[in-house]
Image (cartoon, rainbow, N blue to C red; front, side):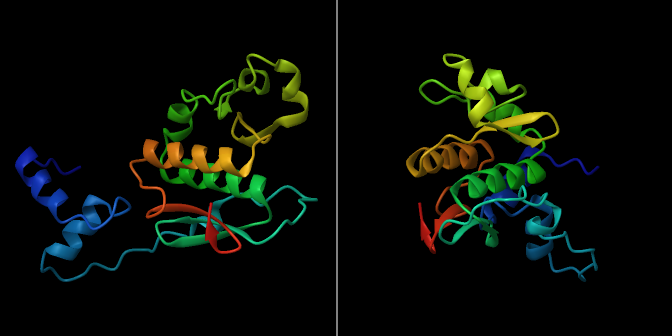
Length: 173
């Protein structure tokens, strides 16, 4: 691992074009070096699990992260896709998101019942598995998903509307 002093790191950060750009990407762009052929990272759509069978399609939904568009069948699928994509890119994302809550619910939790502290009976109908022991609240409106997507982007150091977007019929929610 390369150690970089604070002054050099500050110099690198001044050349950042977006929150999705890594320090290595910035250095490769700024330094006049011979490019090194690196294996391209797989698209997010290729590493995300497929949607559950029997998913009902409602409109044309998609999730965009750093310019990469991932189609989704409906609002719930778009919310799930966003959570899985951010989890794939940011390893501690779900842990940090689990600390956030709406008015009466958590966004994600390790157990289904933990999502609904005030109304645990909702867990049986609305908690859905996400990945590796995580559950998410699927009983959400478009407005709630939009708010939660903004919180999710902020946690990852991204900007909603620029780096992260959920689209319904090609319009941002």
